[in-house]
Image (tube, rainbow, N blue to C red):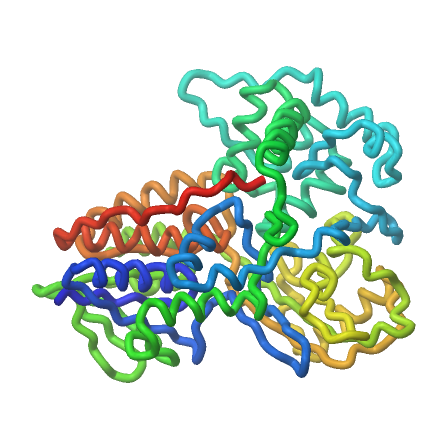
Length: 492
C-alpha cells in the first residue's frame, strides 16, 4: 500500500484526498493521511451558525462556469445542495464622492456593452465616458517577436479606456476579486482573456460585445430552468462549509484526516519521505502533497530543495478580514435591494466592499433580520489588520453608517481574519510558477497545490490538488484515468 501525506485541509488538500480515495476505489494500492494545523477543515471556507443566521467567514460563493466544484459535488453525492443566488435583486452599487450609484447595465468586467445605460450614468464624467469610448479607435498593442503580452491591470485599462474606468470600475471589480494592487497585478496570470481580447478584436469593448452575443445565443439555445437556474454566483444551502465537509466525508471520514496537527519539517529518506509533526510524530510516506499557501510551502520545502523554497518565497501574500454583522430590518436606514457595495481605492475608505449576504442568499438570515459583511485589509491597508476584533466591528459599522445610511446597531458581529491568505499574482508570476513546477518535477514524490500558483478560485484550488495527485502517483508508477465529467448544457 502506497501512502501519500497531504499537508493542508483546504479545498486543494481535500481535492487531493478525494482523488486518492477514488483511485483506491478503482483498485489502486494507495491511501492518504491528511494533516491540518487548524482544529477544523476547510481552509478559507468557513461557515458559522449564529442563532438562525448562516455566516460565511471566507468565500461565500463559487462560479459554476468552472466545473470542478459541481463535478466533485456530483461524484460525492451532494450536488443537490447547490443554491443559486437570488438574481431578482442582483445589483452592485459603487461609491463616488459620498454617493452610491448602480453599476450601469451591460458592464462586463469593466467594459460597457450597452450605450444608453453607460451614457446616462452619473458614475463617470462626460470626459471619462468619451475617453472610455476611445477604446473602439485606439490601435491594439503591437508585440515584437518573442515579446511577452503581459502587462498590469492599470496599464491595460488606462491605455485603452482611461483613468476613470480604472478607478471606478476596473480596480474595485477586477482588482478587488484578487485583493491586489492594479499597478502590480499580472493580467497574464489573472485575466489572460483581456490580453487575448485586445489582440483578437483590437478593442476591449468589441471583445466584450462578442462575448455578450455568445452568451445571449447560449441562453436562447439552452433556456434557463426556473427550478434549477444557472446563476453566476452559487453556494450551498448550509453555506460554503458544506463543500469541504462533503469532500472530506467522501474521501475518508475522520480516520484519514487529522486536525490540530502541524507539519513542522519534511525529510527525504531512502524509502520515500518522513513528515515530522507538532505532536512529535514522524509519518512515513511514499509521497507528499503540500497544499498550503506559498509562504508555508517555502518553509516546509527548505530542507528538501532550497532553490524551490526560495522560489516559493518570492510569491507575495496579503492579509484581509471579513466582518459579518446582523441587524434588525426595522428602521435599518437603507434598501436591501442589492448584492453589495464597492468602495474604490480613490474614495480612501477603510471599507473595501460590503455584501448584502441575506439578499444575495435568501436563507442566510431569519425573517425581519439582515446579514451584512464588510471587507477590510488588502495590499493597500495592511495596518488595519493590527486592530482588535472589537475595533474592526466598530470600523465596519461606522463605515456602513457613513456610506449606506445605516441607523441601527448590530445585534452581533463576527470577525474572520485571513493572515497572509491572499497570494498576489504580480508581474512575472507565471514565469515564477513555471520555474517552481520545473523544480517540483525534479523531486520524485512531491506535489504542490493551492491558490498561490495558477488560480485563486475554489475550482482552481480543487484542480490543483487533483493535479498534484496525478504527479505524485505518476512518480510512483501509478497512472490514473481522468475523471469523467457528465455531459451538460454549457453554462452562461
